[in-house]
Image (cartoon, rainbow, N blue to C red):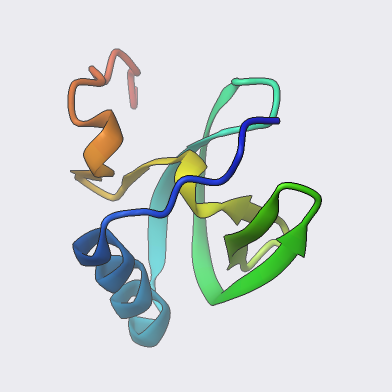
Length: 93
């Protein structure tokens, strides 16, 4: 697993706001196998954890899953800065 890359402060603020608002959000993120998943869930909390590679930040989802922040691709209609060139080819039909 590649080392954790800190995320943009503005995007971190958007995550915190979504947690505070306690509303359902659409979150797209990459798994450790580089699969792109889309979930509609409440965001519960942000936390840090020490790993073998160093300190990493995580998002706790309403489902109980945790997502490393540098793997988040999109929160609702906002792409995370490293993924701004990512194109949405999904169909919400």
